[in-house]
Length: 303
Image (cartoon, rainbow, N blue to C red):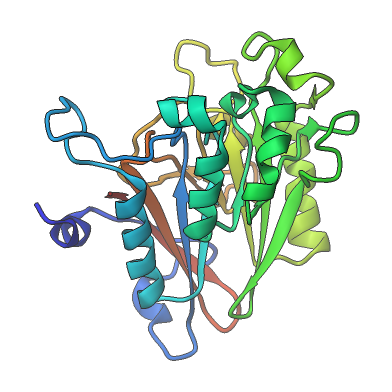
């Protein structure tokens, strides 16, 4: 099946947010659209999978992703391109170039923002720092305290974007590093509780900064059914409020469409993750009316 045919036939979810309006209510010249594109756990997969691969034949690859992203930007110039971490580690490209190629290619694709995954520490925090000049986009992490590291001041808790009159706040979250990453690799990085940090970030972005949309760029994992007490995106959504979209990573969870959950205030929040290795590109379209009420449609697109 050709990519265009797949995009047209991919089932989309519609989350009716705020007033529960239908998409037809927003079909006017005054409606503003914001398209959020996202990846996670690409793990240095630069090339597409070979035709003989048992699971992902002819799928993925930076060149195809770049072409798809540009075709979407041609439809709607108001695009945010985000990554939820684990950019590094997985192919010889990382072993040889240490992340240089990954950051340069993401910069060429004009990524707007990313957060750090646990594997982004694999060449140590110093190795990550050494590659930052190759990244023409920023990194955010609100629950990693980098105060006593080389990343102090370079990785911010959040970033605000202005797109066609829409104010978007994006903050980052990282998974607990103790026991997952060698201490000598993350050094003095301090891990803070994702739930309390998220609630603080959402309050700042929604109420103090007056953002129309709040996005959490998360690398804590979608869900842990064998460990129900472990914090994950699904639990985070239900325990917090004022977050509109959680873009996840870490668990390599393939979702065909975003999950729609209720937050602590009983309002809708979308949670999405698109697997791993760059075989999918996530897309969530937000539509804002003149009162900034919004609805969203989301789907996963095969690259």
